[in-house]
Amino acid sequence: MRDEIEGLKNRLISLVVFFALIVLIVCYVSLNSEVLKNPVIPTIIEVLKVVATTFGGAAILFNVFYAAKRAKAMDDSAIAANKSAEAALDNAKAALKNAEAAQDKQITERFTKAVELLASENISIRLGGIYALERIAKDSEKDHWTIMKVLTAFVREKAPLKKEEIQQEQLPKIPTDIQAALTIIGQRDVKRDPNNQRLNLQNTNLERVDLSGANLQGADLSGANLQGADLREANLQGADLREANLQGADLIEANLQEADFSDANLKGAYVSKANLHVADLGGTNLQGAFLIEANLQGAFLIEANLQGAFLREANLQGADLALAQNLKQEQIKIAFGDSATILPDNLERPVHWTQAE
View 1 (cartoon, one colour):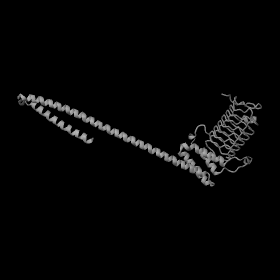
View 2 (view 1 turned 135 degrees about the vertical axis):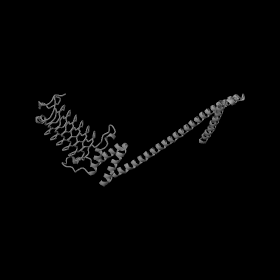
View 3 (view 1 turned 180 degrees about the horizontal axis):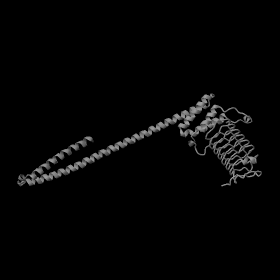
């Protein structure tokens, strides 16, 4: 193609040169009066003009043809370039697909190996498996929730709450590997959690566990032993804590909004500045619990035992305390409430309580 265009270019140049010579001859003859006296000369001039016009037109046609050829060559080059780009894109897609397949295979192998490590009798090896699963959960979004289910199953299997241990005053401190698994669960990327799924930690022995700042929103902790647990600033919003043992637990500034504490044991628990908005505390043992500055707005405390509970500056606006047990006038006197707060018949509404909005 390049040689053909080059040949056309050379022929066009020759025609242009020839045309220029004819024009010069015509101009010379036209300007020379002596020559014009010859009767044959005008005829020759007319012929030359015709020839010049013809060659001029031919030159224009060749120029148009040459331009068309060049445009076609450029189009052909563009088409070839597009095909090359498409081929490169297809190759890139294939390479990416192969890379993803290789990565999936590698993650599957890592996952299988990590799970195998959890079954070891050696606690150090189990810890290695737990931290390997944590890394996979960070690397692979689609395996995130599966790993959380594996870790919660590991906790339920290794730290079940046995009936013979329920009556014991002091249970052994939680094992290191269980603590590690729970820390990873509490610090997980909750944005990767699927909808309508909850962590299952029911009936587990988590005494004195450190879950401060943990995100356990909506978790199922029903029947769990959390005696003496550190749950400061933990997010337990909507969590199921029915019949859970939280005796002496530290729940300071925890988010307990809409959590279900039905029949739970919060005796001596530190619940100061915690958010218990609309929480269900029906039948809960709050004997001696520290509820200082706690938000109990709209909470249900039906048959809850509030004997000796510290309610200083607690927010009881809209709370249902009608059937609360062992609640004294001195306790509500130092708390905040309003006309929507439901009190037992034997107690009077403090004069400083505000009107419900």
